Length: 246
Length: 258
Figure 1: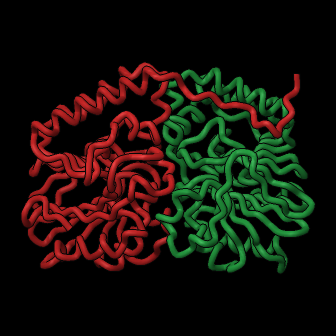
Figure 2 (figure 1 turned 45 degrees about the vertical axis):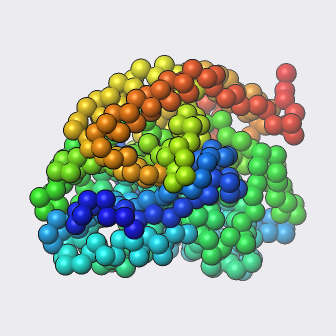
Figure 3 (figure 1 turned 60 degrees about the horizontal axis):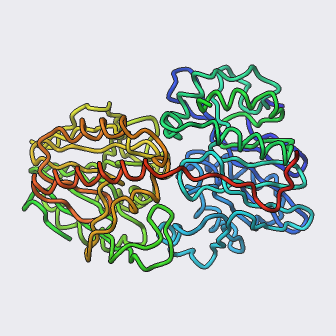
């Protein structure tokens, strides 16, 4: 570990992106994306924040090591998650964009032929790993999808399970087991700003749905866009649920 | 292009056909053609754009707003949301219109979100801080009827309220069901106590609003029409809140543990 991204979560799963100042003074927020390598392709989960384009591009190219990026999965259309989609499609002319792509004909009409609509239960096969799309439990924009990689047992959860981390240097690449637990008040602040609706909804049912899903999948990792990679979900879920007000 | 107030306020639009394949932030079907809008205000040499419309409509947006620029020397751009239907044309608009400032409210810098470099200034505004554009006075308002961070803008001189992704149920051909229209994006309203949302909406609307300029749909013109639209939106929120929330179901391909 170097204290900064990128970090290889597994030999075939890269965590990259960058951190930016958060709404809470002295805190940083991750803007993460992930790269899965398979025998017959590679998928980028979220595109990276446009402000981090150069670093994310360098990290992805290094990890691909000459292989092609075949699939780009924006978890939803919000620009911190999807703002580099055109960049990746232009860099890899054979790649396709996958996910809930219904709106993208409006945003990138010039690339419409390369969009592949996915729904809950659809999957992408990269040869030695299969990535299946899941309807989200906690999300903001309605075009959000989560995804499950069966080989690494990773659940990609987009905006869910988000938390900030202290400004201290050397913490951007830590898993949750390697750092102190998140501050619940700060998580609630983030959720209030990003998700908004937890303030007005009863999140107990959705929290119970999360419990069921995680018990069924038993992921090794929860990989979200805004926070440390979760490698100990049983310990962390009470914090995330408290952050949602459940 | 529509000149809503001669020499002062312009609207440029592209259209989404309600019969077209689904857009996630709109209901599956709605009557007619729905505008997706960009607006411009000017006073003297000062010009400000509000939202950018969609890339698929860029030619219409550019051609629609270009006449409003004549004789202006200070050009700025505001966005009501950091979502693509409101700001995806930002890089193109900055270049085409020689915009030199993109003020923003909140945390996320719009230029960073779109990867735009160059010499465009991005002063940060506080909520409720008045932005002067010549003699015009634009006030950012934070609203609870939102998904992501959203600013409505109230221009005091003209009495114009820019409402982003709300008040957008009037297509060019008919009025869609307002409850249906807000349900696509604000589905979190289902099953909640709507009182805080309604109270916040009432507080925002407790202003001398003479017109509503939504990010989608037709302009709502006149104090009477504004009052009626406010009442309609209140009813829609109340009706949607009375519906049960959607429930997540375990995908069939996942074997649930007992």
